[in-house]
Picture 1 (cartoon, rainbow, N blue to C red):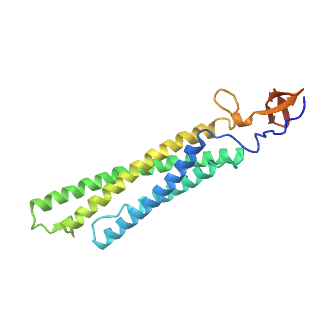
Picture 2 (tube, rainbow, N blue to C red):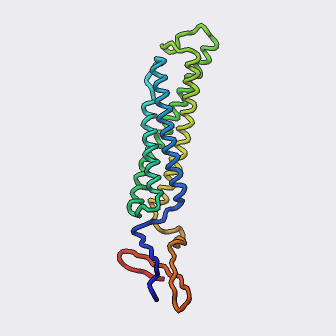
Length: 219
């Protein structure tokens, strides 16, 4: 049997389950991370400008946005076709670790932000019941400032829960691609583009050529 014109070396390139989904998730995580950083920076400016009481949680939120951008970059690199199997598995392993950290951060900050919204809404209700009340929790905040804080924190809470969902999906994809054997389907078959054909006595014969540990296996 003659040698085929095209052969696949599994050590050079690798097959990725749901490659498009991995790439798109990476782009969304980068955009969401940038949005979180922008929102939390704006909230931090409002916090100090209004001389609000307490310690701002926006610093932790900015770091969460940074982690989201890192996850997105790793996902984008892992979803590229030209990445080798060994590097791809390492990217998925790194991405899985960062994703777990980011999920915990997003859920914790979602809880803290929701509680913060609850406190602000209570202050707004008290201010509406007593328009003469100027001192709220030790700081002079107007009703408009309180409403602006509540609106901004609501948007931030929505971004945190969205990030947690995206990271959860990313963790599942990273585990499926990084924990299994790269380059194989669940049924053990190779993707269609890994099947090559050769001509024998004028007839096309399907041939699969796999390189594994320097041994050539032919079907």
